[in-house]
Image 1: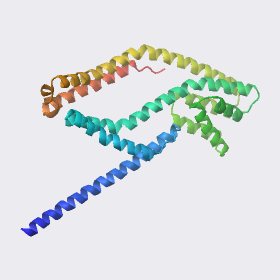
Image 2: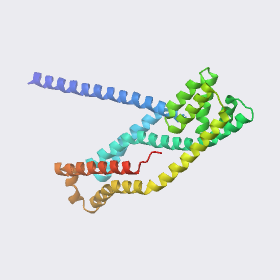
Image 3: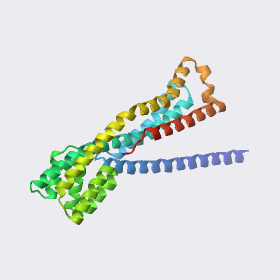
Image 4: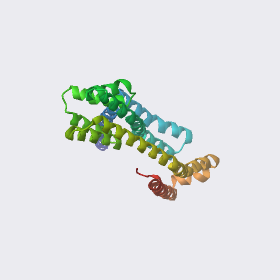
Length: 280
């Protein structure tokens, strides 16, 4: 009997140690991947924040938010949803910040090209024109051109620096600027006139995209309302009558209903996005 209890104790101890080892390795892998991705992402947006501090904040959100939701609602389902939200929140926040930064850069690019063209017509060199953009224009366009100048001073070829900027930003307007600069350097021509024409084209493109965005904003808002309406109604009904709504979260047929609603919401969102997405 004593031998059996000893063996069981050793097995339980081994299982605990193995579980701890697996969780520890998973935690370290998550930390390393998160900090590396955060470092690259923050560097791309010129945000100088310690990735390890962001990781600790993310862990705190991932642990405390589900606990807080579970204490308030007493439902495991909402706690799991809160855990998922806490896990994807950093990535979502980065996507939103990057989209806003790129949108601001696209708006600043035509004026920057006009400034470069005027500087070139006044007799300045290309390096001086780029430096004027860095000094006179606000971020983020000044940050990207500053990076371009630093790479030039380190001895990198202009074509390689421009190609690196295009790959880093991955937006169509910058690709047009890089192509214009590369072609002008290879075949020659009046660079100031090329930049002026490109600035005019980008302004017209921005005006057209603004009109399309205004005309499709109603459809996007309708899609958002349709997507949030079932969640809002489920929350209201749960507050009004928790006993009637509880089977939706604790039974297999309730989970099947939620899965069906989720699939239909995804299909509706997909079709609405296809309708309102117009490429210029």
